Amino acid sequence: MNLIKTATLILTPFIPLYFAAMGGVLSEKAGIINLALESFLLISAFICGIVFHFTRSPLLAVLTACSASALWGFLHFLFTTELRINHIISGLGLNIFTSGLTVYLTSVLFNEERSFHIPYSGHPVYLFFVLFIMTLVLVSVFLHGTGIGLRYRSVGENPLEARVAGVRTGRYKAWGLVASGFLTGLGGAFLVLQSGSFVKDISAGRGYIALAAVIFGNWKPLSVTMGVIIFASFEWLGIFFQGSLIPNQIISMLPYLVTLLFLMGIFKKASPPASLGKIYG
Amino acid sequence: MAWSRGIMNRSAKMAVVICCLLVLMSCSEKKNTAVTDNPKVGMVLSVGGLGDKSFNDSAYRGLKKAEEELSVDINLGQPAKMSEDKKYLSSFASMGCDLVIGVGFLMGASITDAAKLYPGTKFVIIDTVCEGENIKSLIFKEEEGSFLVGVIAALKTKTKHIGFVGGMKVPLIKKFELGYIQGARYIDPEIKVEITYAGSGQEAFHDPTKGELLADTLFSKGADIVFHAAGSTGNGVIKSAEKNKKFAIGVDSNQNYLAPGYVLTSMIKRVDTAVYFSIKELKDGEFRPGPVALGLAEDAVGYALDEYNKDLLDAGIIEKVEQIKRDIISGKIRINLEGADED
Image 1: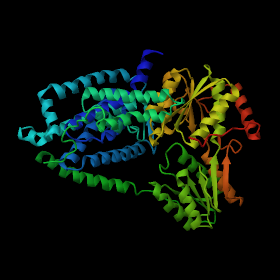
Image 2 (image 1 turned 90 degrees about the vertical axis):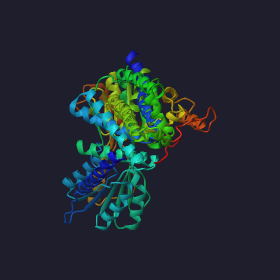
Image 3 (image 1 turned 120 degrees about the vertical axis):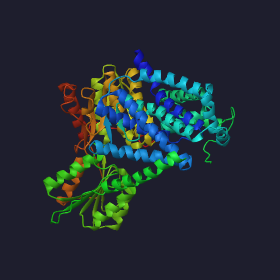
Image 4 (image 1 turned 180 degrees about the vertical axis):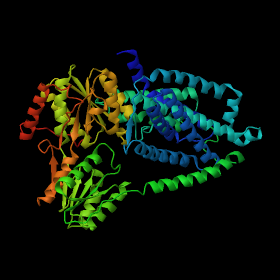
């Protein structure tokens, strides 16, 4: 087995989850619950496929995909903060809307079909591995090593006091959600480039799993990445143990069980941003 | 905040305009209603409608063929959501259709209800069995077609190791699995058949990334042919075969063209044949209610052979497969479906 094959096998379940989870960290650190991660993945996967189909340029495809899900991030910001909609409802609404929208547009653009193939034959794994290291360093340093990151976190912890201290909370949230969408878009683009096709609901629940990893990692970029590694390796174990005595449903269930126990405070107290999901102002 | 409130007003207006356009676009459905003495047939497709390159398209081909060759009048219903199928079924029955066909197992309950309401109309349901004195249930012997592709895989493998990627472990998919294993073992009792499933929820049928990962794993463990029965998750299996320069086997419709040279064959389900023959029976006055299982003998399942894979299957293989096909039809080979309903 050569290097590229091994790298692909190990990283395929990891990469989309990682980018979605980082998007989740950025969003939730600004106090906005992000169930819309699923729709970010889906819209970016769709746009990546479409743009690649028409331009044959992987770079352009990835960039437009990220911009599209950044736009979705901005929508989620508008709904939750400006229109003061419940965060969960806004997130679920975007997910359902995006699922329908992508299917509809696929059928319009591709002669009533429900999926389409793209003639991409490269290996996106290396590029995305580099992006993984870069974004992990960037997000960690930004959140926990800069003054602007401190203010950003204060928006998620106590927005009223932050505002009194002169922090423009709305702008922080808006840019935070745009960045969250942009990062998650990398995961969606990977899904399409890796499998060479877009199909209905290709995100397959990864946005929700990523959100569980965010909770598991206690909203800290490095721990969340560890959480994603654990979740992805459970997916791996599930494949490895197929056909053995242990039903693989049990193995796929374990990470969620651990997340639940964690939320119940069995290992260590979960400490979400204090104003997560609150509507104020 | 003022800077975004302004945007909100304008974007709200835009949203209203876009919604109106979408509603207008969805109202352009056509219907075919000519008045003649020919038998009238109504068909209700499953959600998804035309263009799925699989089930619905195939059923519609059968209906069109019946229209051209048997001169029947046809009506087509494409429900936008599952709850609408009842409406189409009863409106076709009340407008005097002699035969109403429901495509897909999801319509089972609606067909049973409609058949009670309209005892004078004949009904056909595809892919599941319904009780009723005026219902004919058409199901497929997927295990027979899968047996044949298992034979092809066993004859073609160089590593004596083949794989299977199923969507979800349900009785329908187990039929594919069991037929495939027994076909391969029939050729080579020692062959290693590795079985994997993509998941245990709805998403298992639309996750090509997972399909690719499963196929990559199977190929890296030494398998050189992988058969999938996993909907669009299988797109990833075919992509993986192309990437690893190995073979995939397609399912339901002919998928050979998706990656020419890397799709060994496809296990096809001829829904069009099933639809055509049930209409022909009606026309000839031989329509009989009750369940019917369609298999190789009726040419309702089989393996695909076309210009994309003719170089992959030499004459020896085809001869052997045709011989086994005859043996299955004559009953010399029996496929054991024990355990299909378990787990």
